[in-house]
Amino acid sequence: QVQLRESGGGSVQAGGSLKLSCRVSPYLFSGCGMTWYRQTPGKEERDLVSSITPDGTAGYSDSVRGRFTISQDNAKNTLYLQMNSLTTEDTAVYYCATKSGPTCPLRYNHWGQGTQVTVSS
Image 1 (cartoon, rainbow, N blue to C red):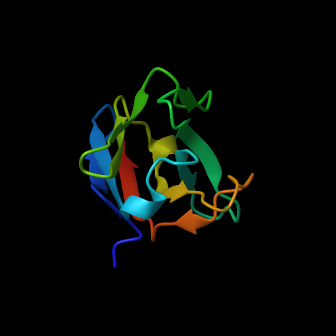
Image 2: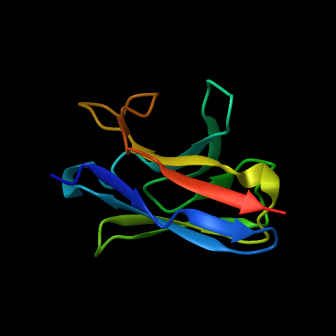
């Protein structure tokens, strides 16, 4: 069962690029919006990186705006995060998430297992 499965993480030097993918089970894809969060070492909370609404409107945190691009492929039920101009501060575990319910809930209630991104100087 797929649910949400991230891939594409790895190690890269500062200034480099990575593209994360999140394969999503069809019944969880897009209906209430999807998002990428990240959790940096030593921090308990996950920080919002980017989100996309069902109509394709994208939003970004200030720290990644202009460098990261969120997108989705409806045919493949896959969410992407293109990350360019990476810095060491982008080092984190990246999670994709969706939300579903009888009505769209406020919080994301389906999460992937995460993928590690490590940026070295």
